[in-house]
Structure formats: C-alpha cells, structure tokens
Amino acid sequence: MLIKGNIALSENGFVFNPSTGDSFTLNNIGKEVLMLIKEGKNISQITDLLLGKYDVDKISLERYLSDFVNDLSVNNLLEE
Amino acid sequence: MNPQKVTVAVTGLNNIDSPGPGIPVIRGIRESKDFDVRIIGLAYEHLEPGIYMSDLVDKTYMIPYPAEGKDALFNRLLEIHHKEKLDVIIPNFDAELFSFIKLEKRLEGIGIKTYLPTMEQFDERNKSNLPAYGKKYGVNVPSGTEVFSVSDLNNTLKSMNYPVMIKGKYYDAYAAHSVEQAAIYFSKMTAKWGLPVIVQEYIRGTEVNVIALGDGKGNLIAAVPMRKQYITDKGKAWGGITIEDHTLLDLAKKIISQTKWKGGMELELIRSDDNKLYLLEINPRIPAWVYLAVGAGQNIPEALLKLTLGLEVKPFTRYDVGKMFVRYSYDMIVDLELFSRLTTSGEL
Image (tube, rainbow over all chains, first blue to last red; front, top):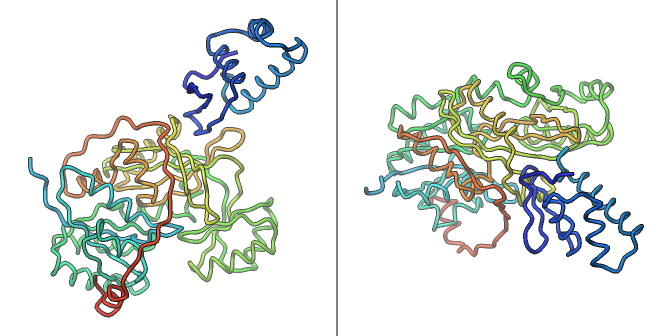
C-alpha cells in the first residue's frame, strides 16, 4: 500500500492532492497513520505500533484502519 | 531599461457576479515591470464596475453593442483613438469577438494592434461545432445537438437521458431534469442569446479548466490548469485552485499546436467519474479567473500584450500548484456626478 508520491501532508494534518485539488483534514490519529503509511509501514506493522501506544482492542483497531484505508482509496490518495 | 509606454484599451469591465475578464487582465498588465501603461476601458453598460475603479482604469468610453454592427464599433473606436492614441485593444467578450476579428485589418491600418484568433479558428471551436472539433482533433466531447424550436427540442430529448445540459449560443448553461425544465431553459436562452440553443449530454464528474495562450504558430506560451472549488448558481468559479495535471497540459498543448491558435483561450473540461476527460467548451478569450494564473507565476495578460506588440515571449515552463483564488464583492461609493457625466458624454 503506497500513498501517491505527490500527496502533501502538513504538520497540522492538512492533506492536499495536487492532481485533483482536493484537500482533507485529518485528526491526530489519522495524521499519524498516514505518516506511517508514507514511511512504508504495512497495515499489520501499523496495527502493532498503535496497539502498543493506545488503549484499544485489536478487532476495533483493525476495523478503524480498514475503514481509513478505504477512505484513502476512495479519495484517490493511494497508488493503484 | 525604462518601461515602455503603451496605451491599452480593454473591454469586459463588468466585474459582477458573472464577471468579465477585463479587471483581472488589467491587474496583470499593471503588474508588469516592462510597461508603463495607460488603461482605457471600453464599456457597454453604465454600471460596469470597472468604469469606477480609477486606480485600475485611467479613462472609460462607452462603445456600441455588437448588435449595432462592426462599422458602428469601428467609428466609435476611431473617435476614441483620435483622443487616446490607442496602441492595443484587448477584447474580452465572446459576443464582441466576431466584430473585432473582422475589424483586425482596419484597426491595424490606423495603428491599433490586436492579438486574436482567425475567423476560422473562432468558428471551428463554436459550441455547436464542438462534436466535429472533437472528432477532428481526437478529443472526447459530450454528444450535443443544435435546436432551433421547441418541437426540435422535444424530438432531440426523446433520444437522451436526463439530466441534459441546455446551453446558450454564447454564455449560460443549465442542467434540465425533465422535458418541462428543458423547455423553460430553452425559452430563457433564446430570449437572451438567440438561436440556436445547444442540448448536450450531461457528464458527471469534476469540472476543471485550463487557461492557455497560443502564439498563432502552434506554440503554447502559457497554460495553467485550475479546479473550481466554489461554484455560483451561474456556474461561475468563486474559488479555485491550481492543480498538477499533465493530461490537461498535454491536451492544451495539442489543441494549441494543432489549431495554431492565436491569443488567449480557456478550455472547459470535465473529468468523468470513470476518469475520462471531456471537453465541454473552448472559450476564445482569456477567462475571468486569469489572475490566478498571474498569482501562480504566469502573467498571461502581460505575455499577451508583449505578443501583441511583436515582442519576444519565451514559453512559461512552470507554475505554482496549490495556489487558490477566492473572489469577493465590494461596494464602491460613486458620486452621481460621475454617473451623469458618463451617461451624458459617453466617457469618464
């Protein structure tokens, strides 16, 4: 899973897709996940990292991550 | 080097909710370091806001409507030229371009330069000729038909799916969701712009536009793509953002080089939900959002002025992606005396 190379992510969680002009605002967790994806981590590595950091059960976290990745895909932010 | 003194007449001072390009064109030219410019506004209506923007427009003259014919326009321009010694005219309305293209040689004969497409180029990209244009240059175009009467309209609608776009000859477009709605828009367009009215397939997707400048020899001098972010009920962009889209730039390059387009143009396109690019319209002049291109690093009005004066212009190679424009309205306070001077003497 790769984020498109030209997608800009700012410190405050603002995401800009220069190909379409679309912009999005992420909360802190969303920003953290997107940065981990940008660093090249896969979903299972991200799951492990977040489980160690936040008070959340694995099933819920996997569901949230799956929804989030689906949102990224629907909004053309992932490489096909 | 001292800036070159030049007197430029500009139309399209109607900086209203569906704005003409005159004021942003003037802003671009005024920002040029190469010109010391005197701007002469040419107006059709007494309340075109640009007339009263004295920091941008030095003097304004009323000119006759295109319906009065090109001779009436030429005679009025001659009067203005005697007073102002115009070097260049930049017309900014689709509806007046026919007259200005026809007058190109006569204007040149009295020392006024223009930089306009040929009549063939102008006609070829006409809304009603767009399907043939798409076929000739290999560009997707929504299917469309010219209609001349209500019965024509009804017959055409029988073979189309709703919504359909109902478009005026020069301006305006509405999405109609039923035969009744289509008939209402047909009457509206006929009353405002005359016949024919164009009925076009509706494409769902994202609206994107490209401003481009061609040198008449097939070279693309400038091009900036923009996505509309906020659209008024008249379909005009009230906010937009420059985007990075090579397919749009390639398309602009292809159209400019194949048609050898001379002057400014705007490509109105839609990227469909299945990622196909459709050409909706080609506007044969600079669009009202041109100042976004200036802000993004391509001063297209300045480049157009240089081309008009026969100066060398190197093609722009870059622009800033992610630059936005946000339009606003602003109330000017105008003394009645100015308005009365304009209405009685035709100049201000």
